[in-house]
Amino acid sequence: MILVIAEHHKGQFKKAAFEAVTYGYKTAQALDTDCAALTLGAVTGAEELGKYGASNIYHVADAALNDFDSQVYTSVIAEAAQQLGATVLVLNHSANGKALVGRLAARLNAASAPGVNSLPMVTNGNLRVKKSVYSGKAIAELELKSPVKIISVMGNSLQPQGTGEAGTVKTLNVTVPQARVKVKEVKQVEGIVPLPEAEIVVSGGRGLKGPENWGVLEELAETIGATTACSRPVADAHWRPHHEHVGQTGIAIRPNLYIALGISGAIQHLAGVNNSKTIVVINKDPEAPFFKAADYGVTGDLFEIVPRLTEAFKKFKAEH
Image (cartoon, rainbow, N blue to C red):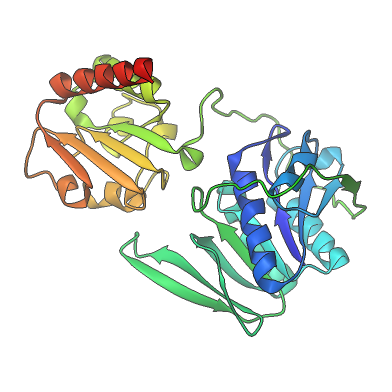
């Protein structure tokens, strides 16, 4: 059986959870087995996971699981997997998923593949998966041969696909250990699509010249429904908050569309965004390294080009 750990935020499921269930369902089809989903803590709408292929939905309802603790979650997930006889565990390659993969692999004596970006190939019951390595410069193939296998899936690796109807949520009784860490406060950014889940990202660099000019970027982002981001020098200069920093030392993303405004494209930045499906670069320096990685490039003053681009998008939306 495939067991998908359906991650939620404050009790609400986002696109990433449905991606993981879709991945689990398609993997279950390849292995000729069932796909189940596991939810932890206070959550609503778990029955919706059935629409994406979870034939069974299990819920561990314990207040101790409302705040993420990697040690507690590992213990609960491992016991649930053993109870249910799961042979493959699927997680999101999120901050929480990254914290769990190694612990679960050690607890279950399992082979693990973190950051997978495509569906597995099945050979004699083993799973062969692919992932980016060396900052996206190469693709590695891993074959998981152990009885239990653990996979974490990169965001935007596949689109969620509805395959059925809402399911029934069943309570699962497992032992929830006492947490060693007490969570006193959680501060999270609200009201925007998180960068790892964003399908469209508009990012700015030092070419914007200062925080007072960020309005030109924000208007474009609002018009096309994008999440905003920035390069490291911008975050270090406190022009923008650090949670918007994308790159090797920030957040690695893989949106469908990445628009870079006034970013030269240093190797550290490219390492975090070069898995984007389409990259558009606007920069007045024709020698900017980013142009070599771009699918589309515009050489010119962004303060002239971006407002015209925004108006063109507004006109297109009004006509369609």
